[in-house]
Length: 440
Image (cartoon, rainbow, N blue to C red; front, side):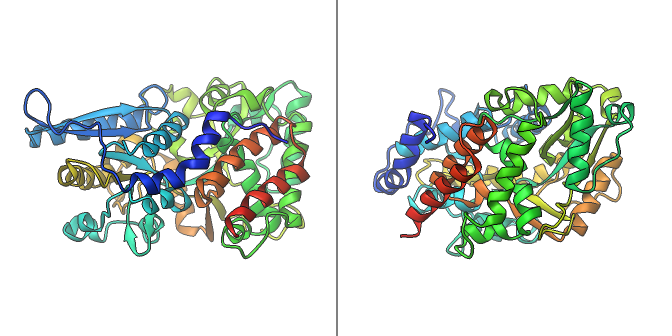
């Protein structure tokens, strides 16, 4: 049995109940105004300058613009990395001290916060602004809706690829693999030559889950994990077990950086950025590092290519244009915010400014429609936009679709799978048991 992180598990276990109770109270540590008499908006986000400089800079610039146009507003930020952010959000929710504005994921992640009466509906922001009303890519905003009301407005749309170092591939005469068998041959050649095939940060589970999710897609078909969430399939489906087995086969082959289960995503990313690992399976939020970031040498950017996750021979997922991805983070406004009107106004402002700036300044995929015809964009960015237009399916990340309790267990179990603390059958069984609790 896997030993979970005590504090995180405790918080997750009581989250839904505390959210419901917190909805009955109205405590908040947010001050309505500061010493200068300005209204204070507390904004917590997950793009630190060190690891997400492009996104950090856009948010900072938009805040500066807004404050210049609204002299009576002071927007104060708290910035954490994604894993720290998830944990702090749960703790703040349990004491009904959410920031005025925060970031949320869609689907199963946002649902308990809504059911706990913690978030304000945001449909009014969209309905009153003609520039926002028809601006979202179809289907993305709907992922933040519960019972017909929208509680988060999306900033990003992400799909996942295997990014690779073309120079390393050329050195060992490697071709981009189109099948999983070909991929394993690439892994063998790289390990035989003392090169780390792929880097992954399995410590927090979610980065390593990309490997499991793609293998589940390719072996079990593009809807298998969504079907599990919807109760149309079971997690102990043989194809899901096979996906877990193939993950450990790659571990046994030396397919990942040594000690992956003890590495965070940022630590693992360093192996790819420093050209110590040939590949990195991640999402398009990393595009700035390969296209636009002024902090990354052009020499490195020129070495980076990408490929779609290979097809699994004999699997049900035969379309290489089926992706793991979905909506990225969106913005919420706390229901009990003392500056809710002002917070909603800034959210609408940020969403509009984010669209164009995220393309030009960051090179990430926004959740809103942007006319790129007159923009000077990198070839990689243009290719990925083309991929999106041709995508046959985008399966939202399993941990985003799942409830917080299932998502946390999934993260812990993926870490254990990579660290060989559980075998594939145990991995499957613990998921089945946790999902069964929610279906009673």
